[in-house]
Image (spheres, one colour):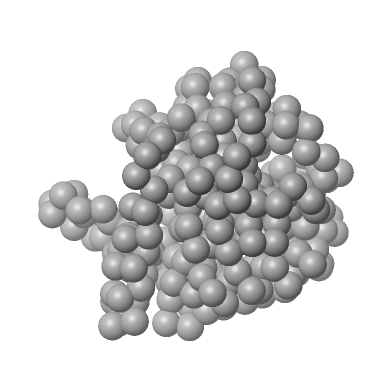
Amino acid sequence: MIGTRQGRTAGEAPTRRIEAAGTQFAYRDFGPLSGTPVVFLHHFTAVIDDWDPRVIDGLAAERRVITFDNRGIGGSTGKAPTSVEAMADDAIAFIRALDLGPVDLMGFSLGGFVAQVVVERAPDLVRRLVLAGTGPAGGDGVGESNARMVSDLLHGLVTLRNPKPLLFFTRTPNGRAAAADYMRRLGERTEDRVRGTTPRGVAAQIAAVRRWGAREPMDLAAIEHPVLVANGEDDRMLPTRSSFDLAHALPNATLRIYPDAGHGGVFQHHDRFVADVLAFLR
């Protein structure tokens, strides 16, 4: 059931729930009510508390923003899907349950995979598309582990620290400072948070990512929607060249690559990214 909408920022927005396709989806809804809503599709292992407040609040200064947890993840019920296609079907069901009409989609990393399938399966549901830190199905290096990524994950396990600062940011002084700032921002919301992703959910998403990397490529040339593709210049998780591949294959794409930045380049350069997205969505 949809609750009363409150708050103009992510920190003020209560966690709501709505049923769609047999799942109770946890979501937050904030920013002005006018205009086309921006629906966020988040990354591997992420929950709604993992969105950078500077990005979602920056966009909510002008646009209605909606974030939600995938099925079986965070505050949403059910069993986490093991395919990107099933995640896309869930996203379509969620958007339709809220009766949003055409939306703008912002997909980051795994969410970018999902966004591509959403626009393929329900093109009339999407107006414009932002694909950040992501890549095409079957792309070179997409869905594959690499030595740098495995090393970062193992370091996080051994030190009992969140691996995001290593996975999302460069090792330069600028990158290290940006990583520390980003982690502090993720802790700004202290109440009404959702649970983290369970090991079962992580395993399901790993299977989905691998299947995405192994499947036949999509016909991206058939996607005529305007698309903004963004990434850092040194992505340790998905090769930055994947962003170039997407921008080249999509017929109506604009590419933004941020300097001295990695997979989380849109968070490190949140001020520039928000400005780029708002200009694109206008």
